[in-house]
Length: 365
Image 1 (cartoon, one colour):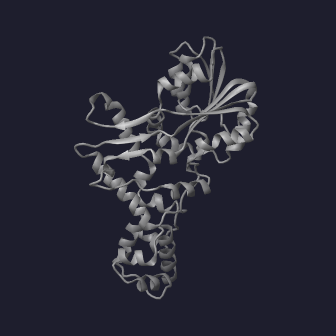
Image 2 (cartoon, one colour):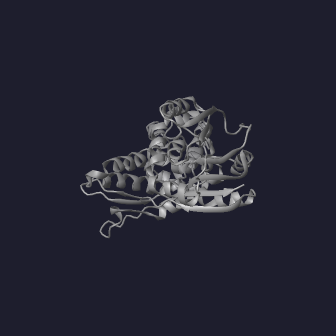
Image 3 (tube, rainbow, N blue to C red):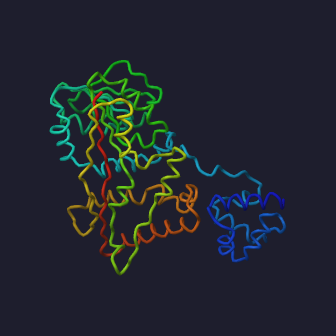
């Protein structure tokens, strides 16, 4: 039993990104005691087991080696339909958060000049969000085709479009195995490329789906831009609580191919590398202002608050950050910042500004 316990404690501590000294401070013992536990010299007192289990967010049986530990993190959780189903409301709201109707209309009419009927293919269309935005702006005779694997999303999309005059078709198909049977005038994707394990391969598939001279449009974000463009009243001189830098966590996600936090800015290079011509980029002019004192902004304020409080990093706490490479103390700083932000948002006069970081990257085949 001693060997099993010390092996589990060490691995669980390292998964948490904690040093022996940090664990000793938490357990209120000396770091030499922690070393003895991990090396099997001594066993923890029985009263310490629940405290260890609580810290590591596992059962006492896992600490004791009676049950196997779960993998450190499911690095490809975004590949599973269950993840998107469980967060359906969040992602539906999230897509609307940064959307600017006037700006998008300007892009369609003045920048992309889509003034003739087109057939538009949407990779990973979800509930048809892009189709809802495109079709009212496109000339009569245009047609929207969406590819999506999730039946729930498809049902919602079909129901919406069945009540419109727009020509449409939805294909229940995995985008990874989809083989284009015809060519389209425009191929689009929204918030897709950040989560693709091999984006270059997906871009090639999109290229195969385009007619000669057709346009590809990929809409994605850069979380670094969002981070640089964020300010809240917590940063006032009397508070001095700056938003921490999350880059180390995001870089760990890139390394493990979970998601790419800078994909919006990388896409022009990827399109150029794939042989596309006339690569252009626009960035959304939408800047969110969270100010609950303005009644006319209540809907936008509610969306801002909902998205913020339902992010994985907010919901999962310390474990989310340590699983993605942050040390324990750093993870505590992240969690403390979320806690203080929540308290500030609940105060009498909360205020925040957030830049979208949403890129519109387009090119011709």
